[in-house]
Each structure stands twice: as C-alpha cells, then as structure tokens.
Image (tube, rainbow over all chains, first blue to last red):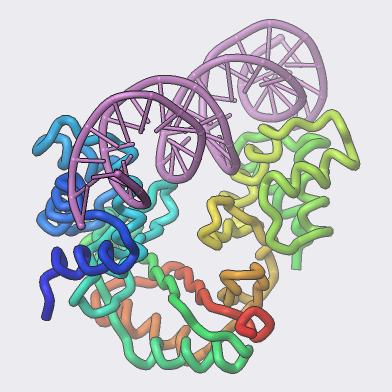
Length: 142
Length: 142
DNA sequence: TTAGTTGCAAATGTTTTGCAACATA
DNA sequence: TATGTTGCAAAACATTTGCAACTAA
C-alpha cells in the first residue's frame, strides 16, 4: 500500500497542483497526531514545527486532504470540524459518551449494508454517511 | 397527550423562566412550518407575524425548545443548524441529496436495533443517535 | 517562466452576548 | 416588585477569500 505522502503527491500532480513544504508539514503533523484534531488544534501543532505557517494554509490544506480522500472531516456538532486520517483505515462510526467524552470507533456491517439498501430504495446513490451514537459509558453509568 | 404549547409552558415554569408572547409566537410558527427550518428562516417567518421580534430572541428560544425536548436540532452539514418539531413524532433519520438538498425521512428498525446492540456491546447505555445518509437523488444523478 | 501557493488581513456567515428598557409571575 | 426577557448592536467564532509577494515545476 502506498504511503499517504505519496498518495497526496500523486493527487496534487493529477490536479495540477504543487507539493510544498507547508503541505508536507501539515500532512505529516496530522498523521502523527491523527486523532480528531480541529483545524485550530492542528494549526497550533504545525506552528510549533514551523512558526511561519499561516492558519489559512492549514484550512486550505485540510480541504485538499479531504478532497484527496486521505482525511475525513468529522462533525461532532460542537461547532468545530475535526479531521481524522482515514487513508488505509477501515471506515468506522463513533460511539460517544455524553458525560466523559470517551470516543469509541465502531463498525457494523449489517448497518452499513442497510444504509446502502435504504438509499437505493429511495433512488439515491449513497456517497457517504454520518452515524454518531451518544450514550453513557460503563464508567459514567455508575 | 399534552399540547406542545403546554409542554413548553411547564418546562419554563419548572426552570423558573417565563412565558412571553415572543416565545409563544416562535413555537407556534415553528409548529406551523415544522420542516427543517434554520434559525434565519424561522426568523423571517416570525417577523412576518410580528415585525418587532429580534433575531436573537429566535436563537434564544430555539435553544430553550431544544433543551425542553420539543425540538430537535438537525445538522445537514451545510453550515446552518436546522430545527424540527420532534415532540410526539416518531424518531427518524435523514437521507439528504448533496446536490439539490432534497431531504427524505427514513427509519429502519434493523439499524435501530443494531445500534442498541452495538452500544451495549461496548458497555454503553444508548441515549440517542444521529444518522445522516448523504448521496445523490434520482433526479440529480442524471 | 508560468501557474499555483503563501501569509496576512479583511471579509463572511452564523450564532452569542452585553446592556438598558421592559414585561411577566 | 424582583427577576427574567427583549431588541439592538457589537462581539465572538470558525472559516473563506483577495491580494501582492513568492516558489515549485
């Protein structure tokens, strides 16, 4: 399997876009920290490595990474979009504890299939979906 | 079953808040138009009935209505929060056309059950969930 | 050399908030 | 009458964009 860096490089070439040190750095930083970072949080981490990078570049690069399929925007409905490195990883949804914020990645093939069927039944081609389950984890129930 | 207006009144009393003509009007307007209005859109409709109502009051009232469980905030990932009168209605999810915005309400018991099972498997008590399916409708595929 | 990229600051668009006047319980 | 509420405008917030200087290919 190709390295994400290479996938990104190919994507850029394909789209007549250019690889830059900033883009490399941003992808690299995201891969290192992977977990559900907001643009703001990623920006902070990137800035530690190269203080000259601008906030807008992070936003712009995250859009490119999303378009290239390397990264997935997550929407936990708290007003901030978060991003997750999705390349090479299985698709999954999220089970979130409303009390402590614990976040478990879940996958259920039955659900995935039914989603497809449901969409088809209504004449839709399913492009993507979001499923978030909210509840109380075993610790917080006590 | 209680009328939504009464539920709202009781909620306000419980919380030591007050019923006002504006709140009555906003709830009433939302109930009349029910379907997936944004705060902005609701504000426009409210304003037609009473031009003196302010935008902020609509936002504030929508928050109260959400907290009281009468209304559910929807997130179609277009940057605007929409609201749906949920009181007394069956739960359902949404199938959304990414191109034209068409919005179909869906319900699948198999999925609902699996969600419960999945949560339980991880020790969670499921409180609620959000599921949005995004795709292209038959018209927009052409 | 040329087309794409950057950082900056300003603009955008939605939602929130401070405040003084006002209305409900 | 005391406390909550309103409308307004300003603020806050995340995100996008215009632009002149820059840089990868």
